[in-house]
Image 1: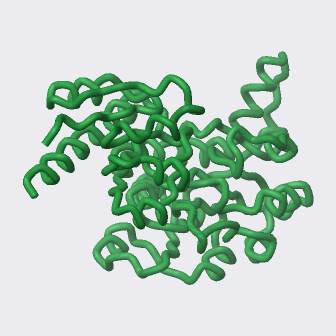
Image 2 (image 1 turned 180 degrees about the vertical axis):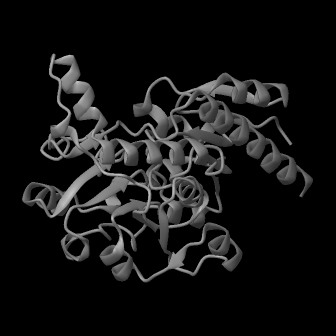
Length: 309
């Protein structure tokens, strides 16, 4: 078998590229995304982050393509159907950034409850607001988790340690031992929305989850509830969320993800009761190194297995 050629389409930490080079792979870097569909035919595998869209056209042009490696968790930028039809494997690294996303989620929750961004902004303007910045205690509040995978379960553990009550909804009931360790309660989605003080979303973007939090679902939430989304922007109907924030139905929202990134419409992020971050859930030094290391290890394993056939 010839030495596999790997095209790195988006930047990854050098730890991963060094691993691949040391394993004998030929590594090249994409300099212009416009030519990807033309040069893809020359490569056995590509590494992408979230910025590169791996379309059907690109996949069909990849005559030698055997593997699409997503350095990160979400796969919504890859045409999985087209890859499946061609027999091209798709791998990702959801385990590598779970702690970073969970910590950001908790940080956003605390920031909402204690109005930290507003407090910081007011101090820098020379103001001294105390009564006006009265917040809420998280201890004793009900945290509703939509999804209890790698990230959701980590959020649950931290929140439980803070004295919060954990409510969970999931397409399939979570393992009983996990629920017992979290002292969590499993509820259908609608009931979770009705009972939760804070709702945090931890599901992938699929046909089933697109706009799952729409006007109807928001209408079920407690008046003044908080919504946190660090999963994928398309899971929330942003127009419905904007209306709920403007009307006071929701007390606030914290968003790290958006239906279009960067956001083209700024009405939502300009709301005074919204905290926004630019999709930085996995953006820690440790997570970036781990993502790069893990994707390289998975690529090496894939081609070692492929060679053995």
